[in-house]
Length: 201
Image (cartoon, rainbow, N blue to C red; front, side, top):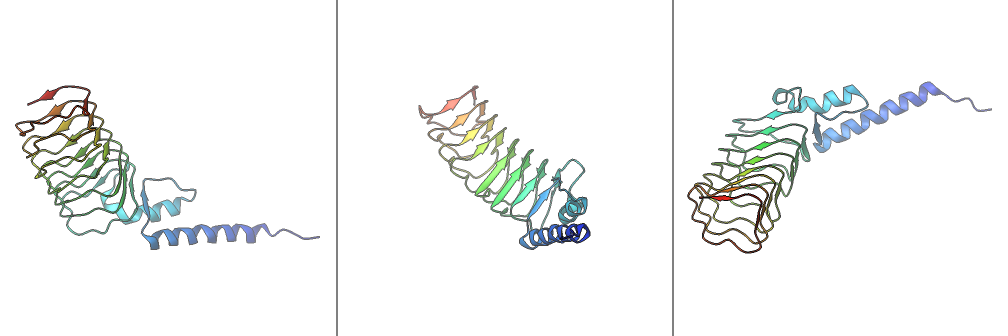
């Protein structure tokens, strides 16, 4: 009759957990604020961003100059990159709160970007937006050098275009709130545009 060695089985399970942890760190995978079965694993994963994250899962990288962010990069709260010197973000970014990139050097957004709140790109160096970009909250492009918006842009809140050189709105644009032009020289509004609120010049 075989006798099960429970102690050996537990040790084996523990080793597998640490192996998965080391593999994740090697690949640069970091889920901030996530809950893991082993608290030690969670602490090890969060340690990489410990100096920048609060107890609510918010990450503050304001004025950041040189920092290697993991890919995928998942933030349980808000991500603040205002006035940062970063020009690019990882290809896969998920922010469950707001994304603040105001006055930053960012020139393009990640190919796979999910944001649960607003995106603030005011006075940033953004050069273009991804086709089909979806923003759950407001989208601020105030003071940017953008000259056009991508087709199928979806904004769940308000769209702010003050101090931009945008002359027309794209086809299939959806803005569930208001559009604030703030002097932007928009002259063309296609019939395929849906605006839930009003346009303010």
